[in-house]
Amino acid sequence: MVKEEFANTKKLLKVRLATQTKNFIWLFIVGAVMLAGSLGSTIFSILDNKEMARCHNVSDLSVSFFLGIVVGLIILMFLYRQSNSRLSVFPQTNNSRFISSMAMNIIVAAVAVLIVLAIYLLSLATIKILSVFVDDIYFALNIEIGFIIAGFFVYLAYIFLFAAVIELIGAILRKWTYIALAVLIALLSLAIVNISDVIKHTPDILAFLVREPSLIVFFIKSIALWLIISIAAFVINRFTVYHKDRSKVLDKGVVIACVIIVPLILLVVPGLIIFNTHSSGSGNDLVAEAEVNPADGFIAGHDIARIDVSHLPKGSNINIKGTNIVVVSENGSSYNHNTEAVVFGAETLKNLQGDTVAIEFRPTSHIVNGIDIFQYANQRVEAYLNGDTLFIDYFIDSANVVILPVWGLARQFDLYKDKGVLTSNAFGLSSGWYGSNNIFVSVE
Image (tube, rainbow, N blue to C red; front, side, top):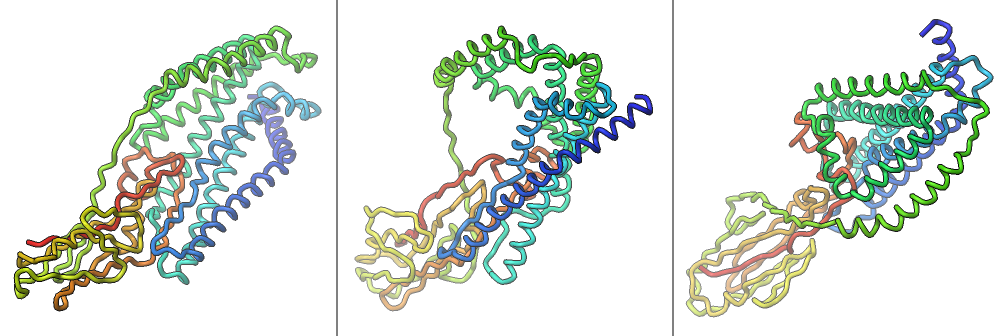
C-alpha cells in the first residue's frame, strides 16, 4: 500500500469513527440498561429473599453481546455501499475503503467486549460490597483473574474471526452479486433442510478451533485463520469494480428467484425438521458428599446416626417430635420444601424390638446450571432421645447464592477446567430439584 493510500485509510477511519459516535453512545446505553436491569433485579432479589436458600442467577451478558455483535456486523456488511457513498467526497480507493471498514468493525467489536467486561466487573464489585452488609451472600463461581483476562482475548479472537468471515462473504457478494446470492440462498436452504445434521456435524468440522484445549495453540490458530480469511477478503475486494450507476435494487430475475425460494423454505422446511428431528433423554447421577461429624445423634448429608435404646423395655412405643419436620406414615408421600424435612419410618418405633434406632438424612439438591445451591445452606439434622420421645430437628441456614458467569463460550481450555469458573451451560438455564429433605428412621 502506497503512502498516500495509507493516509487515505487513516482519514476514512477517523471519519467513520466520527460518524459512528451516536452508535457508540447507543452501545453504551444498551450496556448500561442491561447492567441496571440485571444487577438491579439481583440486588432486590437478595434483599427481598424470604426463603432459607435461594439462587440468584445473573445472565451471562457476554453470550448476548456476542450474538448481538455478530448480527450488527452482518448489518454493517449490507450497509457497506451506503456507508461508502457517504464518504465519497473524501479521497479513497477500494483498498482504503475496505481496510478502514474492517478496522471500524474491529473497533466496534472491541468496544462491545470491553463493555461486557465492564458490566461484569461492576456487577462483581457491587455484589461484593453488598456482601459486607448481608452476611449470607455466596458466589457459586470462583473468581479467577487469569480466566477473566484470557476469556476477554478469547472472545476478541472469536469475534474477529466472525468479522473476517462476514467481510469475506460481503466481498464475495459485491464481486459476484447474483451468482453469489444464488449460491448463498442454495446453501442456506440446504443447511435448513438438513438442520439436524448441521447442528450435529458443525462442532466436529470446527473442532480444530472450538475444541482446542491449549490456550496458546488456540490463539496461534485463530490469528493464522484470521489472517488467511482477511487476506482473501482483501484480495477479492481489491479486484472488484464498483459502478456508481449500478442499481441498488436487484435484477427482476433475482427478486423472482428469492420470492419463489424463500416461501418454499418457510413452508417445506418446518415439516422436514419435524420429520428428521429426534430427541434423546439423559439422566443425571448426583452424589452428595457426606459431612461426617463424630458427635452422636448429629447427621449431615448421607451420614447415619445411631441412638442406643437398649434401656427401654421391649414393646415400648417411641414418639417422634422435632423442629421443621413432618412425620408421615410408610405409605405417605414426600414433597419438595427447603425449610422442612419429611420423616419416614415412624411405625417402626411402635412395639420396639431392637436396641438401636438408626436415623438417615437424605437432603434435597437444587441444581442450577450444574451448581448445587443447597451446599451453601448447611443442611443438617440433630437427633436425641428424651425418655420415650425421639426429637429430630432439621436446620437449614439462610443462603443467597449468586451465579455470576462471564465468557461462557471460553470453556474449552484444560487450564480452566475443574476450577469452578464456568457454569454447566453457556446458553440458557438448567434448573431442577432432586428429591425431598427425607429422614428415614429404622430399628436395628
